Image (cartoon, rainbow, N blue to C red; front, side):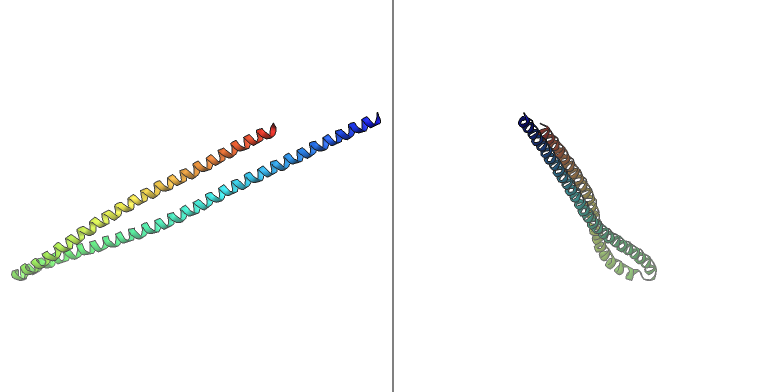
Length: 179
């Protein structure tokens, strides 16, 4: 009888020890899972920060390019205005010279007319080029904005999809561990 009782208590202690061991193993597994989840979240945060820095860097480069192009356009416009002012001054001088010497004015006008045609042609070409550059800049800005919006949306979709998958995996693992 004593032996049965001792056997019974020994089995009971052994069973309790197994239960404690299982509880410890479960606790370790849960701790390990939490650590893995924290690592994954940290990796996601790091990737997002890296992408934000990259986008900021690209944005800065594009802004620098746009500012440079704007400066070129302004210089071209100032040059064009200076040429137009110079042309007005020349016309004023022509009027004065016309009064002094008709023949000399006719020769000068013919010469200036040729130069003026060339200048106008160059100015027209410059104006077309400036207009094209402005349209290209506007198109580039719009494309950059669309690309940045698309990248941002893709990053957010990927992030939420990963989170959803992780939640589903965690739920499945907890269900498996429960059973």
